[in-house]
Every structure is written in C-alpha cells, then in structure tokens.
Length: 343
Image 1 (spheres, one colour):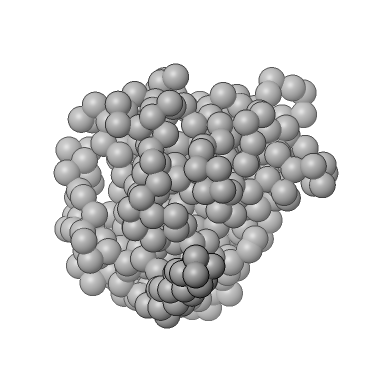
Image 2 (cartoon, helix red, strand yellow):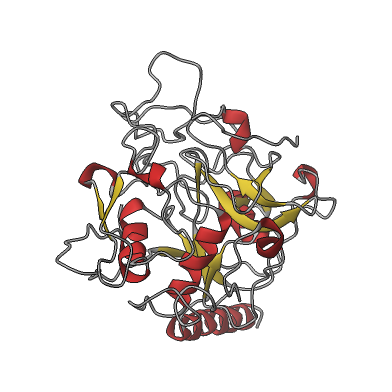
C-alpha cells in the first residue's frame, strides 16, 4: 500500500525549561535504545513502493526511545533561536489543541532575543509543526554538543548535514548524511528496523507495537498492550482530554521489538528518504489517521520545507565508544561459549 497523506486542516527524558532573562537553556538528554542484529534481511514483502524493501541495516545504531518532545525542542530554540534566522519556530506551535504549547516572547533581535516556554502539560508530548529542515537542524545541534549561540555552521548549519542556510525544497532534498555523523534524522531503514523487525524470528511485524493485529486506542488498558493514538472515527477523539497528541510512552506494553514507543500513531515521523525526487519520507501515521497508516506497508511523504500539526520526528545516534566496547565483548563471549559448546 502506498499513499500520500497531507494534513492541511488541522517520558521520559524531556526537560521542562526554567527560563530566566536572556537565552539560557537547560541541556537535554535524548533517551535511546540500541538496535543491533547487523545485516538483517529487508522486508521485501511490504516494500511500500521501494522495490528493495526496507529495514536492512548493517551497522549498530541507537534510536530515540520516544519522539522528540516539545520540551526538548524548546531547549533547542532557547539555545539557538534568539534571532531564529532559519525559522525553527512555527507560530502554530503555540496552539494548545493541535500544537505543542510552545510560546515565544521577545523581539527576535540581538538586543531583544526571542525566548521560548513550553506549557507544562505539553512538555512530554511530541513536538509538531516541524519541517524536515527543522529536524535536520535539531540533529546538527545535538551532533555539535548542544551549543548555545546563534544559528550558524557550529550550531545548526553543519554537523550531520551541511545545510549552510538551506531552506528551499530543492536545497533540502539535496542534503545527505555525512559519514562522520553523531546524531541524525532517522533513515527510513533505521526507522523501519526499529519499528517492525523481530530479531528472535528474523521476521517483521505488521505494526510497530510488536503485533500483527491493529492496535487499540485505550489509555487505561495497559496490561494487554498493543495500543496507540490514532483516529478511529469514534466520538472520543481526541483521546486525551482535548489534546490531540498523547504523552510519549503513554501506551504501556506497546513498544516495538527494540523498545521504542509511539512509532505508530501520535505524529508522523520524518525520515531521510527522498521520494519521487520532490519529497522526504514520513512513517508511522498520526493522531488524525486510521490504523492502516501505522502498518509496515504504508509510506507517506511531504515537501521537506512543509510543517503540519501531525508531523514530528525522532533521531538516530552513533553508539558511544564505551557501549561499542561492551557490545564487542558480548560478541566475543558468545563466540567463546559457542566454541566451548562444540568441543
């Protein structure tokens, strides 16, 4: 199944910012999970328009356990968005229905820089109204160690991607991840593997909740699991007291095989795929879409400069050297056990 969906109408690890005067911001932590099982086969049975299939990754990486939150994005804005040269802030982010509750104050000049505050009840919900270009600049900022200074080559314009002021669709479509990346917007294969791949059976689930059955929508029905935030045409939409997004990790026992949450529903998530030469890829469905959009065989896309209320993202990370050493020791131990068992 392949369809383009455009919405025209309409916890963990986040820091609620305590803002003083100026552009002070708190450092953030992106909680990640490791994705290993190198060289897994692609899911060619559900390729969604990509003849090669998706999900085969021949390297170890970490991926965000949750979608990037409004609080994390607010910290980013306070660190680099005093003037906001490259429009990292969308005024619709201030909405407390479709938006993420991020308000902006100040004049946007060096003398009177912008400051940003997130409404507490939205802090641990996914940021939305973000374009692919916004997501790439956030990844560059993480890559560069979360600096606090103006948008430029040492903050948002270079890092995993050499953006250097790119804002048009044509320019953003020309961006590719550097080999020296530390943090990045997920590739489609990274996103897909983390969402659907079951390393125990070397197969893929249909939904990113470790299930081949469509998720339910219950926020209270935790023990059985397999729940997500999506639109089912019922009268209780939205499902969280008038808010369209839910808290990241809200649905217990509904994680992917690798332990990520909300890769199905809540907000569509950008990935690096370039589709039809004009679009960047989106995966996972959103709060205003039906359950079919969460399936492995469903792929969407949008112009990389566009930002809508049902669009967010998560990031990938190169594993820290210490974790790679432990991973290598684990492999060595496994090989020794196999050798000894064969004696």
